[in-house]
Structures are given as C-alpha cells and as structure tokens.
Length: 296
Image (cartoon, rainbow, N blue to C red; front, side, top):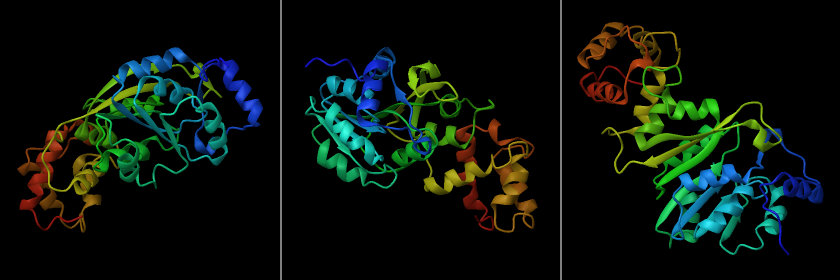
C-alpha cells in the first residue's frame, strides 16, 4: 500500500482522525507538514547510511520517516504515551527505527546509544524540538559526555537566535556561551509557522551545532564556569560589577575584591555581560584562583 508522506497535511489529518488525537499544549506539540522543510533539515545534517540519529519528540513521525530513509538507524524519544501506537503504525515500514517512550531529560541516553547506535560511524541529533523545554533538552545532551557529533534542530526563532548570537548583540547571553563553548553554531533556515499543525504563535529557526574537537576555552570546572557566566546576565541592564556582587558569598562586603578581580582579568567593571566574549569570561574564571575569598 502506497502511503503519502506523513509530513503532508492530508496524511497528518487522516492520522489525527484515525487515532482521535488531541494536541497537548503542555508538551509543545506542533507537527511538521512540509516535506521540503524536512529535506532541508536532512541536507544540513549530512546524513548517510553510516549515521545514527537521535530524535526528540517525533510526534507522528513526519521527520522520523524521512530520517529513516537516509540514515542507518533512528532512535526517537517520545514522552507522550498516546503517540506510541501511532508511531508503531507509521514506522511499521522502517526496520531501522526504535521509539523509546521516555522523557529525554530523565532517560539514560548513554545506555540507549550503546544499545542501539553502537555500530554507527557518526551520531547526529536531528529534531523538531518541543517548545517550552528546548533549552533544557539541548543543555542536557551537550553537558553529558555522549558520542554526539552534532545537532540540527528546529526551535522557536528567539531561542535559536540566542544559541547562534554574536557577542555584543541583544540575543547574546548565557545560552550562547554554553552552545559556543561545546559547538560551532550556524543558522540553517527560518521556518514559517504555517508549516506546522497546529501553527505555533511564532516562527521557527533551524540551527546547526557541530561539536568542537575540544571546548572553545580551557577551564577546570564547566558547571562552575557556566554558573559564573550566567550570573553576568542575571539583570541585563546592570554592569557585571553589580551582577557579580549578587553572585559571590558576601558579595556586598567584598566589593573592593570584586573590583580588583575584574581589573586583574583586564575587564572594565562598568561593562555589561553581553559585551564579554567567551575568552574574556574564561580569563575571569581562571583569575578567580588568585582571589580565594571570592566564593560562590
């Protein structure tokens, strides 16, 4: 039986009717109904028959289906129990797809990668990420030591622009720093809201993040470094000097020490967080070892 692609309005609507499916806003469900957009995503992912794919939030399988045609294996995490029978049906023709009914934020991803993708030469995360939890999903994947080579992911335009933001721009913030610490980021394409069912309130963007061979800067404690960079943006309109008084234990008491620390790292205390490059933040972080009274 020759089916239309899932990523078409007719097939998606037929499946919705067949299964009596209602979208859950809390899960950020917006299904892709444009095959051309999917082909653009797959082209940007440089997928071949040796590539393993991790997908998050496959929905009814519109992207999953096209990935299955190009990749060696696809492992898709779907949190919504109601979609499991739908995916069992739609992925029936593809023996290289494994659907895991778990929350990606709680799943033992390393275990599943070993179990399902061990024979793949390259592993890519390719997904139309659920709205609302895009950032935690990406950070969770990046900060674990997983054998992931890169990410080609769709998300709300505003979040995507933050990942790819250059220093000194309005979109630049702690998320830009984490993304660019681990990966080289680039924009693939902007996606209009009309290619989703139901259409979201805002346009989307596809971003490509390719893992760097080594992190962008050399530091000894990533979590501590990211906590320090995040604090520089805690109040966007304040100077880093003011924001850092809130970060450190007894920050108000140690005002002078904070000024000395900033100046020792060559940072003007009147600057705002969004003007500091990752290298400047790394200098600041490494300078902390000379200021043992500054703790956070």
